[in-house]
Figure 1 (tube, rainbow, N blue to C red):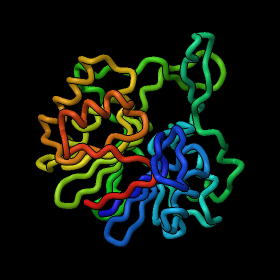
Figure 2 (spheres, rainbow, N blue to C red; figure 1 turned 90 degrees about the vertical axis):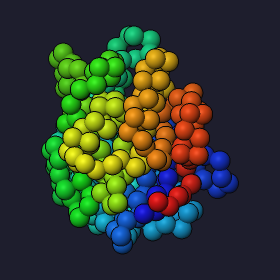
Figure 3 (spheres, one colour; figure 1 turned 180 degrees about the vertical axis):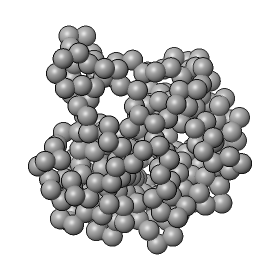
Figure 4 (cartoon, helix red, strand yellow; figure 1 turned 90 degrees about the horizontal axis):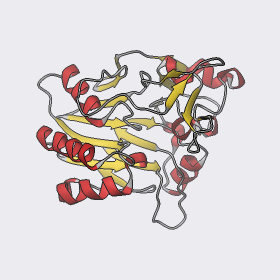
Length: 273
């Protein structure tokens, strides 16, 4: 399995771009999976610079309905889209509380399905546990079962009228079952531990070897961070790649405690499992 980071918040190589967002290209057994598309065409430009042909993509997975994960989809470099897997709730209008507490700011998908027929016709709506290919499963509607990970505050959805708290039922975890489990996520909004416990429940007896993606630990307290790290240690995770919304402080602490088991990658980096 080869993993290519097309979009991330940081970059260090010449000729590549960064933005607040995530896009990962996964090559697995002659199949190419595009996991998220960032917020613009950055993933396309970086893929071209890395000599990766996105036209060979076999499936696109939208992890959840936020602009920094789905905004770039209309820039996909061909008019013929592969199947696009998304939870129906990803297309709700989504909001976050403004930093100045003066209302809401829109953080949902910045384009409409009605404006892109080729995208609309390629969408496959999925719920819960859905096997989309041999060894490839999407897991959404993640339950909150871990004591130290509560429902996120500050995120809402709704069209007009009162907003409803967003419990991120649309967040999809991508699981590849090949000599152990490799888990990919966009932001793990329901919580890193909640996501991993859910995967463990759906794949009893299977070991989670690798986790890749945003861990949304940027603004958590030190106790929450240490509880998360201990949870990863208890699962004996062998490879951790914290990206996007993990936050520098959290990523460095994970690196400090896991050493070579943690890879601090950026846009333009690739690695092989």
